[in-house]
Length: 261
Image (cartoon, rainbow, N blue to C red):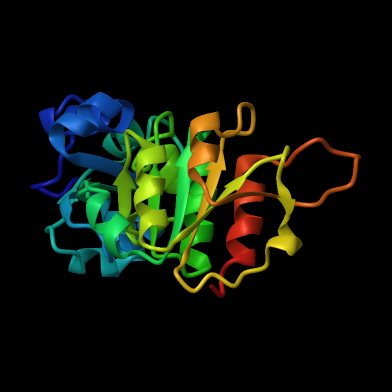
């Protein structure tokens, strides 16, 4: 039997709104909210982001009672409603709307010491992987230049395992200018590039002013203006059996290398 206050209709306005936020970056930007699914991801995101609404099935709440302690009181939903929110019949029965954190780069450009900067990294899996690696290796912040996948889209959130909510993010319409501001206060900006670049081991990791690792897309790499705005270009030594690494792998190697700066 359904609980009396559970949402039972798949056409409920709140359910339809949550689905719209799940599917549309434009809707998410206009509402200042993002959509997350699954108990582990929602609990992780709640450590760094303010929750607005939480939807759970009774069974999911029983399996993960910690969800009941989140700031927003949970709204009970039935299994058919959970399937609508998930867009599939396979669902863990936990969905949340969170307030999107501010993405002003100015505080990060003035204070962060170890940064990751991305340009044109469109693949959500790569962006999520890089956010997760940046958090794992102790970086302070991430700058997102033009053309990057939205950090709070469902696919990026899943790939980052919630790291997007634990790292300060800054959106930079003009990434070369942002890198120039970092260099002005002594942060070394190192562009990942295949050509006219020094081997990674030759660059060392002695950067007393801090470091910013700059990664471009796998297909296009970094634009010329961005590379020229950096202190130096570095490459990861590889055998001739492959031409390049994808952005998520290459960036993660660089983040690991500079973790002790």
